Length: 555
Image 1 (spheres, helix red, strand yellow):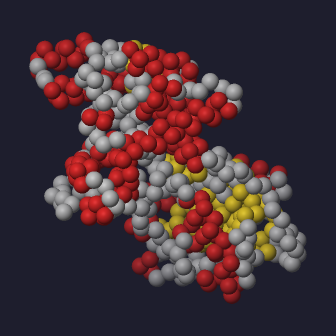
Image 2 (cartoon, helix red, strand yellow; image 1 turned 120 degrees about the vertical axis):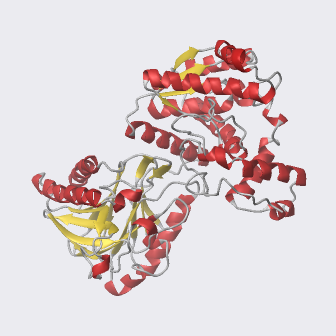
Image 3 (tube, rainbow, N blue to C red; image 1 turned 45 degrees about the vertical axis):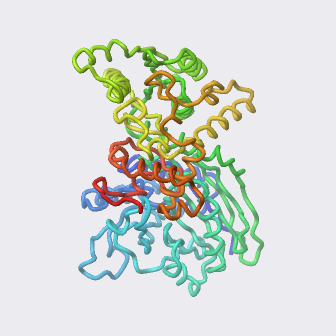
């Protein structure tokens, strides 16, 4: 019995692009074979992209995925890769591999498939279908009911898919009697801060359960509001990390399963990322994926000189290049000189296309007919900026991105349809205001450490935040200090604590009542907000679903 070289191919796929995804499987399989791999493992739903949501329910889509699978099997042989065992994910149909009841035949499944010698050697349907958080698989898939252990060059390899290792029992618990030498897990596990440690600990627990190392391969890239961070790894039964891939990049991780009785030898180990770098790179990955996969080449945003638009622009420059970022300064009579200067300096540092479009003439044209005052006049200024951005987008084809943050979105502290909330994607949607400052400081520090000019002007970070819609306006006129606000929001939104629990924590009743009221009244605004990358355990959108029309008030 000889050692077995495993290649974990964490690749970036696109939902629905079965031909493009199949080409990626062929290209990365060739790389794996050139590296001496015997088995290459791709992530969950590789051929279809993930998550496919209700596409799974279309028979035409399932037929297209199956046709791409069969073409891939043939293409591997034609490319001289027939000996290579290729394990990948796709959408299947119940009954292909199981003795399914007649009523279940043809129902969609989340499937892992082993290809070799131009044929489908084995199919495995995912058992545990998550139905919480961002997941809705129980609605679209049917569960498998058999375990899968495949033979690769005389070595017994167990196969499961993602959620199958998160739930006790099921296919992993049934593998003891099969005497597997390696457990392989195909994953489409979305990123959220701190999740990497949980994955590794869980995989180590399953490794002890089957008394064999676990190889965990994960998707990478942005798909709508989800970010997949890769971070594939191999872990031993005692919890030792044997190999790990870097996060947020496509990568081929190689590891050798030694001869029976030989010690396990560590392979490549990617250095861990700082917490702020991890979140920053997740957002960059999410924006880059959304831009590229939806056919855009450039983004457009309003540059106010404030911290939110400055950080958003820096993220965009890192995602698609500064030359592909269009920043528009839209000063009003209330815009300070330092804000205009900061916006210009930011664009210069990023190499962005910078434009100045004063809003006074457009506002005056509206006011001639409407004669608005107070909040209505302030909101008019904000919405004119949104109109200008969408007009430029229509004329030139840029994707408008919104720089609003999670704290503003939670409390509704933004004018709907303004420059801070309009557009097709919102990079900071799941980043609270306190973290916005932290990420900006990290990005500047990373640039300085690399001998580069920090991209964000220091004054954009240090000056008090303001919408500048009236003289002397500051955010703190309407909101509690952001450090306090974000602490209350974390408890109320992410941990679902009620008023009584918030008061028991020691928060001031006036602050609690204000924040709770603002959050509850802003659900209608959040429903109309653009997509944005999920980076926390609970993001607005898929994670948190509340009725807009809702008379419940915290007692």
